[in-house]
Image 1 (cartoon, rainbow, N blue to C red):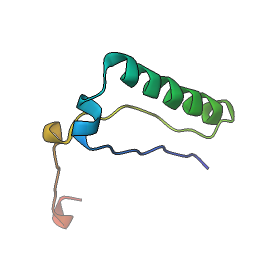
Image 2 (image 1 turned 30 degrees about the vertical axis):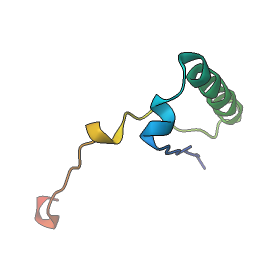
Image 3 (image 1 turned 180 degrees about the vertical axis):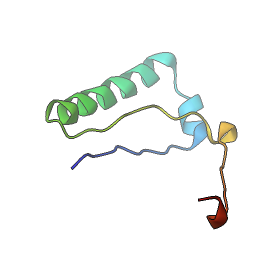
Image 4 (image 1 turned 135 degrees about the vertical axis):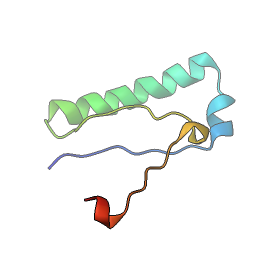
Length: 64
């Protein structure tokens, strides 16, 4: 079984952090990522961008 780490933060909380605070948060995330990855239980990982850049894809059942 593979695991995914999904975390959502309000954009204000993210953008109000200093570069150093953000780097500290990412260091903690990478440490957790490394522990799970070492155990062979982590799938692909990526940091998502802000919600304003999101794209929603929709298709009809007929398109399958």
